[in-house]
Image 1 (cartoon, rainbow, N blue to C red):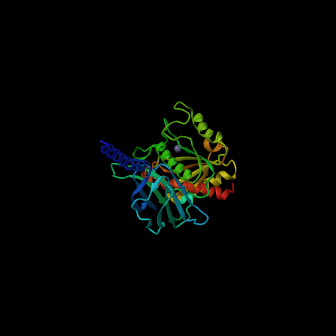
Image 2 (image 1 turned 120 degrees about the horizontal axis):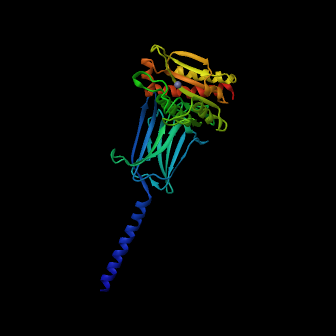
Image 3 (image 1 turned 90 degrees about the vertical axis):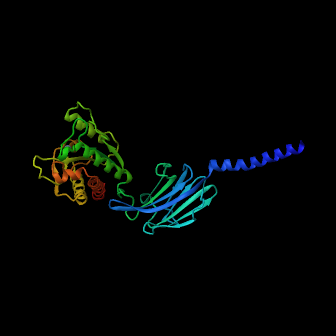
Length: 350
Ligand SMILES: [Zn+2]
């Protein structure tokens, strides 16, 4: 009787000692379960993509770069995580980064990547992805490493600016309708969103006059009300540097083609802005340079800050209509506008 009691007690005690740490362990520690790295090419740019798979959601992590002692080292510290069976040091592609090291310190797992360029913000991106049952992928920490020139879509010299982007037309006003029935209001919004993304990646506070297919003032507005509503975005946002309205050109003759920019000379800065936008769009879009022109467009005249209205290309031209709907061309024009803005700020000294 007594012996049975003690046997049971000891058995139970052993079970508890075995269970408690394993329950605690399963609830807290994350472990690396997979590792993958590859150079990805998207359009003209390529970058190194590192995927670190973990056996559970990755909740808390911190990212450090740009250190004084090791400027090229990017460090990501994941809380409550362990290295698992993965190698402590992994050689990388060498074009973007040399090595990746895993190091456990306390309850943290430190991931250190030695990059080929300084580990400053525009040269990397760190984010997490959820477990993907369809693709058979675990929870992942993703580290993207960019080369010289930084993150795709990052333009230097724009940080801290406030810029209004006005996608022309919208809602009841489709703007010009071009080849294959494509509508100006859709193209202007698509390009404007790409411009917004690049500018935001570059540290700009972007104000959009519309972010979907709608009239800015309202469907029954007069032209005056509609255009003034767009100007108001600039007027009621503090410290706006420039206002850019994005449009497509149209003409009765389908042979008309090329890129143009319009401005109203409130000060010398309006023409300077127009010229810089025009040059960079022509460089990127490679369409005929129709130059810059003075015009009495409402949004340019009534914006208190330097303003320009760009006509990307002709929606009524067979070749350009096709290009305007093409994502690669849209990306090029968006990049051109962003670079044009940076060139303008450098040239204006403002
Ligand atoms: Zn238009």
